[in-house]
Length: 415
Image (tube, rainbow, N blue to C red):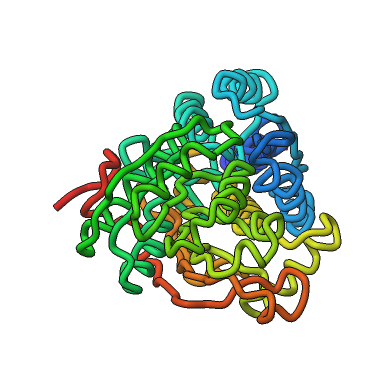
């Protein structure tokens, strides 16, 4: 029997090609499976669980992130999504140690919330160093997308520039031109005072003075008396948390609003209004990214959040949910949880949900979306619990945030 050498060679070649194809398919499948590091996507919620900012973050932030994970299905690219939580206690060194452990030991892929601007600045720098991602919703300092921007961090819900642009301009238009600031002496307060001062001066106003106080100084009496004696038309409260609530209560006790001075809460959360009550908070003009009663979509999501927390959500909560969903969608689109691939997709994909329509993430890390100027209702105007705001103005996203041409972010290409 004669062997057909040509047939044998062809058959052998076919087998080799088929074998190679199988191996390539298996390797590709293995590579795809391995593109989710450690076979799990880990999200860390680093927040204030017990301190003065806990009502602006804390359990609300954790609930919002977990809701997003559940709504996404609990898995991405076939791998489970895990949420871990830690309390940074408003201490930058504690936050840094926790973030390092999460990145180096626990292999956390993204850290969320980051209330307290000093902490957000610290952790966003670590995210860059460790090639992970930080998404900031709780903190406001515009430095986060300015000189301190990174290719690994996103500033999502709001910032001090947008707050200043909204509240400062609204009061200037109402004829309130002279300001005195009570400023929390840390990164957020400094940025809020600076950004608001710039808006006031650009609109022909003046800053007649300022007092900086320790961010945990609950007794504001001496500072408020200085503001009262300044005779400024506006007392700008460049702070946040329980200290802000106490300062507004004390201002009423000293008769500051009754004396004709306007209180400007430059960062007011709806939980602050709840704590104050409408009698004390009425008339406050504030700028915000989210209000639960804005439309049908915000009401539907807020009802679900309320069922879990027994309070209405604020812009930090809504931003934590929206940004977590956007992060997971970006992983799915990128086919990996590798930081730069995910960041690229997050910048590429538009954001259209109950939080923002037509939202986009710029090269400086700023998520651009509409902002809203509200006025707190009088008690007689409120029809139900949590019915606190009436809309004064919508600020389009391209006007609400600092223009890229004015950015100090080194990632922004000029000219």
